[in-house]
Amino acid sequence: RKSSVSSNSFSYQKHSGRDRCVTINEEDPNKVSNSGASKRKSGTPRKSQGGHPQQGAVDYSSPVRSELQVKQSKEDDDMVTLVHTVSFYRRQQQQQQNAITPRKIARTPVSLKASTTSPSSNRAGTVDSTTGFDSDEEDVSSTAESTSTGTEEGEFLVQEKVKKLLDEVCKQQTIIAQASQALNLCAATIEFSGSTESAEGERHLLVATHRRQAILDEVQRLRVEGCLRPPGAPTEKGRLTVKDITLPLKQEYMRKLASDQISGHNLVCLLKYNETVLATQTAPTLPGLLSVRFPDVLQLSNVFADFKITMEIYGMPAGREVLPHEIKYHIALGKKKGGSGSSKLLHTPKGLKSNSRLIMPPVQSPAGPQAVRSPSLTLYGFIIFSLKEIQRTSWTLNPISGCASPLDGTVNMRVNCELAVTVDYHGFLTMYEDVSGLGAWHRRWCRLQRHMINYWRYPDDEKRKAPIGSIDLQGCSTQRVGVAPRDICSRLNTLMLEFSRPARDTDVESLKIVRQGKTTIERYLLSADSKEERDEWCAHLNKTLALLKAWGSSNVGSS
Figure 1: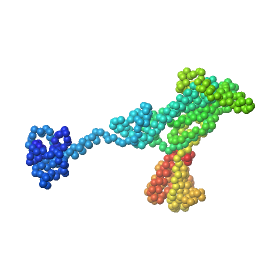
Figure 2: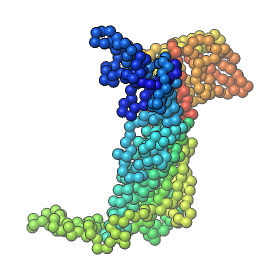
Figure 3: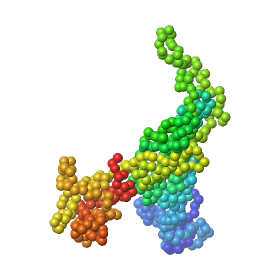
């Protein structure tokens, strides 16, 4: 084909029908290679029928580096001159695309739109208010956010927790609707107006309302922070128990209650921690009692060491029971079956159940039988306590202004907090001991349990004998257990624990005893058998010290 190319270039022919190189014929420019011929390797000439290569016709399947100088033709416009190889241009194009378009990162397959239908549920699947990953831009922005807030696994756990919390919101809304319907029935019937059933319905409505709000607050926190726990926060969980809740009453209130001037109050206690809300049973104020005591035992699991728990006291005036139980529920009394004289009660006939006044009361709620109500229980006061205050047995109640409360302003209760995970590890350690002013190493069987290291001579002695010695980690001043410095002990795989105590007159300076004015530092040197065992002991000892620092020695117990 007539064309002109430089000696160091490659030629392509523009063709709309196919993307194929065209052979350049040196001998006869007017001849064009047969396009239907079979392709051969680059540089291999096509053979004739006789087995000899055809003169002047060479077919190539890739761009041909030409050394020819072909005359200019009118079809030069259809020829594109490439300075480099095709592979070079392809690599360059791929590099440019990678530099402009960020690579889409594979995510954990979670179908947000398929699992949720409401707009609020769609937002629950992400950290912020985005609804999904429909474009590359959204994918890149969410990836950048997950990189800043945590790993992909942490983001997936946040999404899963948000979904579970939103499911729980739907359940609490159902309970609110059912409790409201029951209270509307109580308000519309004379039998249950101001009854204990009505007070119990108010309690269920109060608990469901506060649980729903607490869950929504936790969902909002997860969406804003994007992580289950803030960075650097304690990760070990504990179990908190609250029992023997007692609320003293005012003297004037007790006099009015004893003289039958008032009918009393119904009291309920709520315990709140993050999205968890626990409630006691309804307890009435009775004449002659100086306080109201709740027999309930409230237990919170999965509590972290930095917890702040709120206890709220609610109450409402109690109504007087006007009708007895049999009349209230329309139970037939005094009627006997047949003439046998038996005192068996007659059951309500089946035909009369549909005519019951309890199913369709004559007086409806002003907003209708399906109206959602607000709790009638009033907040009388609250307290907030943390891990530092759990040793107390009495708290001052924070009052609510403008509320006539029968409480005298104090709350008595017992709070117990116990770590759900404990450290238990055992193995051989060689311990340095000072014997008559001379140092000696003795191999001991040691067991780390809770905050104590007990040791024996042999493993079998652990079950049969008392330990020959122990190390209490409560007073350990070592911030992080590691390999002992070489200038103190050059023995391999040796750990060092330091304890501060007041100085004594009998303290003698040695490798184990270091006097610092009025304070003495006592050292314990423990040598492991191998590097792996040394690392295991370091990990368990550091975990124990971290638990002691966060929870205290009295709370580090076994589950």
